[in-house]
Image (cartoon, rainbow, N blue to C red; front, side, top):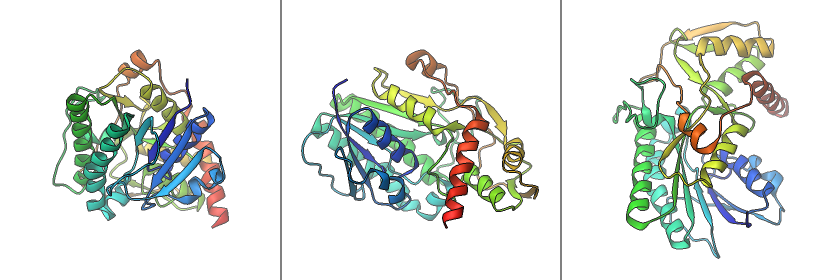
Length: 315
């Protein structure tokens, strides 16, 4: 594969920074763009001085200019956790709408391939289980989570419009729960919440009775899926996630056991519109990409716990 020049919006975020590492390891040039509203310089500081890496602090909803050629645009800019998009609801809507429009416009101007980081949240609180790509979802557009759900649904719609109207090479990854090093402790999602509480010797906070389910994909598996999708010929949305489903209560017990936390569990009410189930149907990813996750949950959690333990020790 010839070396490419790649723009990654949200490049200082959890997944964006791992994508920077992956593309650099493959011999490509990488430009990371991030306004650092939820991303962190710490995620990419190890790349400072790399001859093929450049970082730009910029809001992707503003005018985008990149000098020289760009072969690929990966649009990962967006708050992605409930805490973040509830704190920044308008910014979340803007990056999904205006930011995607700007990133698509740049890709079109440069003749670049475009990949959108969408989300399992486009399925809302699903009435079909597991969720296949042809399920249209069950979303409350005016609920508190609607700012994220609808931002991503619009982002998918405008991406497909650019593909149909302008012939742009586009790819859409519907990303299910992903975890691993470089997540923030205050991220608000279940993995950093539980691991942080366990490492501090606190009881883990389970909402509802803990019977709601999630599936957890380790970041390295997800990055490999993104890479394969980008270079495939598949131009419709594709689920990427781990199909192994477990209840939140079982997940809490697993974290406590791995960390050695004996503080137990406390229960709180379910947040508004919190999905009861979440499990990807990855049949198409298996067939089209030859991809499926291979990192065992406990192995991935051990690496994640080690990361958060270092963060807590250094703070």
